[in-house]
Image (cartoon, rainbow, N blue to C red; front, side):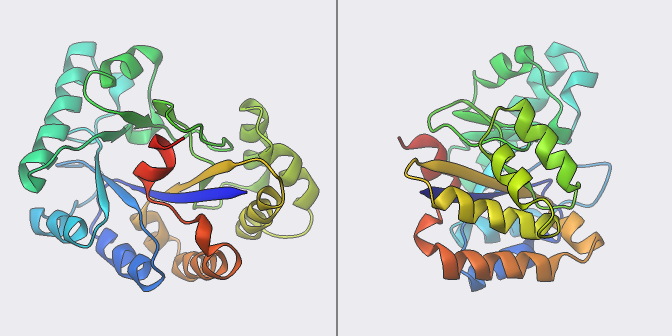
Length: 237
């Protein structure tokens, strides 16, 4: 049995296009948004409010999308809390979830983020999520990193995804492999929590909208009851 949630990073302007597609298929998600990002344009305050008003969760992603392992602990602390406060001022409510920009973190940064959040998500793929765990490692990156990458990361995380990856390796491409693994996990008696993460700018840049639409259609047809909000998946037992 499975539960699935979607998580999107960087707060780029294409997030609103992703919001529209998600709403078409009744797929909830969380958007991790910095205030600024030197790598690309981020959405406006009004865009953030639009996401929230349409019942999408908003998570913190530092203030300036800084790679926290490249700066001092003091600066990292300021980046983390400033990003949280920026969003809370816009939304008028608590922002309980955090995501490390660029997937860059260490255990000292994990402890720092624990002061401010209920969870912190990484970019480590191949994992299945343990409910009520603070450090959240996602299962799939919605970008073709290669099937061997998925196998390597599932091996590193000692995940059942490894066996299913090996079984389906020659059957399909990377995105087909995601669907095959979802099917395989749903056939087991145990509960498995899956998080799919990505970037709307990446989907736009690599023309992956039809691939994402196909995955949404597949989930709605094959396992609609598995769809969860991010908070429900990681906070509930």
